[in-house]
Length: 169
Length: 338
Image 1 (cartoon, each protein chain N blue to C red):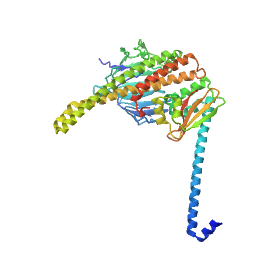
Image 2: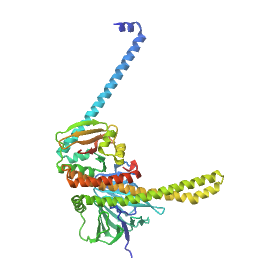
Image 3: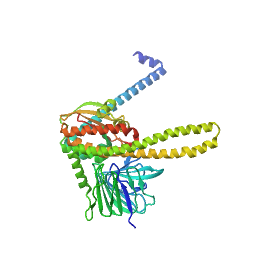
Image 4: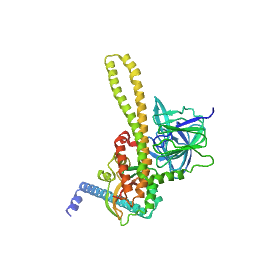
């Protein structure tokens, strides 16, 4: 009531207060949008990790190959070309490797700790510097076959790709 | 005698080398990628040009036909890794065409560039011939000649192949006995499947062969790097002398000193860099496409039986190779190489 009275008697103050209000609302909205964007990005990446698990379990070699980055880290080994990616995914399928009862036990933006999981070498360092973008996500997945590490991130066109696979540990 | 001899040096990594120009892409089928010298990977199209430092990678349905010169052809078949590199021989730049993995057919016709190449581990030259190089998943090579002649050099020994003859070179070994290919085409997949089977049945032996091949490349890279470093130190000393001459206002003497003493060493230094880069990149290629492929096969074969002693032995030896590589080769590479 007090506030309304001030605005009523002082139009300039009323405008200022309106602007402050608008600014506050805009900032709050921006923060909410940012949080919601982050949340949806994380959800999307998590969905992708689950999709990779599903494809591995179903032995969907072609789909896994097309989802794999052109340059791909397998443990500490940098591999290149769709042929090598296909060799890996078809090898897993032929071996009957499955991630039964999978649980995502860790999800992070890849950092030094995640890098160390895949290997301590100049190759791995270079791979992370060159190919792992800041909007990539690292997943640690537990399953009946042991724990694996996955990094999923966008390529040049923004399409999400499997960038790294580590384990089972 | 019109028979033209090709000296084909089978490098440590099943590398088939021949002198060639940078090439125009005249035909593409399926998916073909190119990794340029800056490390960028993109799709290759008809009309593009493949330069020194580029690597052509074909997919399972990919074929690329390159034209290094009018009338000459290089056909890069599916699932192949092929690159054009450059080396220095006594101050002269030489192109080196390398097949790291897969199958590449060559038809060379009246090359205008003197094709003979000689390095400590490779000798090769091209003029008017047709032949095919097969580079296997285990690092071994197979060379067959359709016309002309090829001298295959490996492990310090050579075999001269004539028309319709072929020879196999196992990883790190001298060329085997030559054989007749008349009337029968070589099935690369069948040959390579045999290699893979043998490799998986005796993994540590396969690894040892690759390690030996890699070691040869590392020794070469280190030797050229050492020469480069010594040359760089000498250049530093000479440049200081030249600066002294300039500081004493002996400009003409300083310029003459530069031309006579410094410039030749600068040129030699560029050659040393080119050569140690060539060998270190060859080592990287061997690791990425041969050792990497072997690792993938072993990992997937034993992924549900990881405690198998055969796998444990493999991993132990593999880790030793990687450690050696990391210490000796990785420092010679730059980010763009990966």
